[in-house]
Length: 234
Image 1 (cartoon, rainbow, N blue to C red):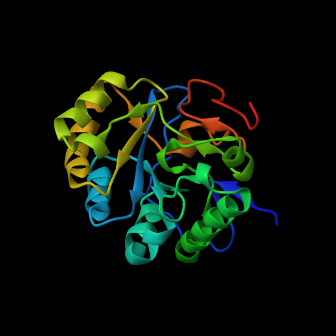
Image 2: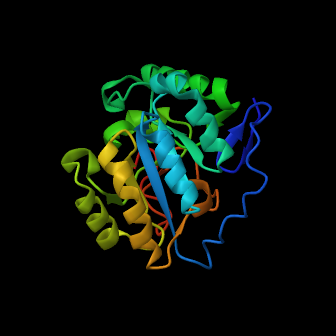
Image 3: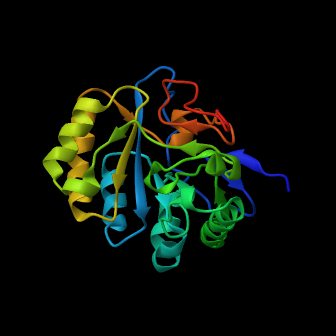
């Protein structure tokens, strides 16, 4: 089945319209861009996070669990309406390296269908839970695989000051930051993260905009500074 890549999604039907008032994304070849990414949602704090991002004119990419999306349909729809991007984070956060090729494909297909039922789009990029990869995963995933280069460790310490400190010290142009919107402490810290990185003139963009949509299926990426991290079978 043919598909069209537009704005970080594979269009697979009548698309949910984005906000017509949204400005064009910055040109990341001319300004310093970073991508904030949020895993494991959507959850009870996601709507407030979307408010915060909107107040700061910041775009983000959400790696969603398929098992969560039905409970938070409005938040998922709002992500698209607000100009954010959606990626797949598997159905229920299984370690994909423990699964067979067929099991990985079934898991991701189930996740795609749950997301597509809400927004009429399939996520283009996949983030494997825990960042866990092996040859089976890389060969089973037929889309770009997106990791990160800045791990805020928010899931571990639940400390807003540490989140801000790590983001401020480790971020550089082209970075992909890992955060989790299921944690209140993380969402509480996001305004300070945005303000800290804005002081260094960073623009906050989606994965698609950071990479100028120049992503290859089956290739593993961690940031926009290198062409790729690893290709299948390497």
